Image 1 (cartoon, rainbow, N blue to C red):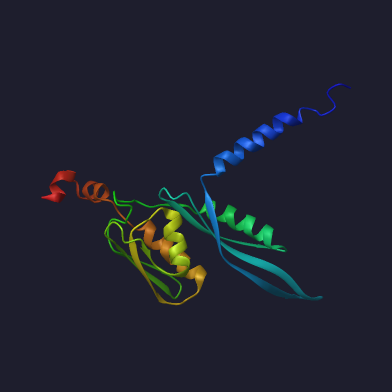
Image 2: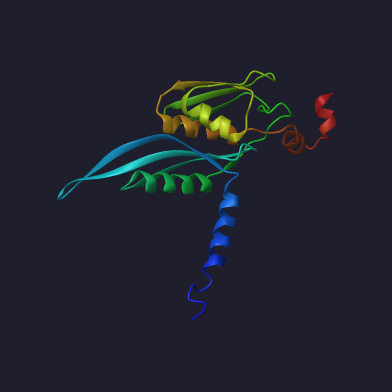
Length: 181
């Protein structure tokens, strides 16, 4: 009868340890929408949350979650975003290696590297994705649709297609020093 707690303190330590692992990940909600589904008995309300997850060290993902309450939708969005992470190659000046375009639906995103000290020149969902990816100096423009989900996915598409000089050299089968010359 002395140990009625059943070792609950150990569980608390494990939970705190898991929270420390996840603390490097940041999440930002881009949009929360109340959506309805028409069913036999009437309309069923739920919430859709678009969430961007990133560690500001070159990894970022966009997730969508739907649930009956906002907190559940955001939690599902974070889990979905972590499943769809992409790795972004960053330069020494925390920019991207080359100009690139991304497409998702009718949304097109154009991104270009920028000089150190420029900052993130982008708007809406594109800015959020680039900041959570760890890009500090970049110019970006949304073209076409203004839908936040498609713009975020177009940005992730662009970032996933980036290549470093090392990748290009290995594809061509030449040493890295020969690319500079």
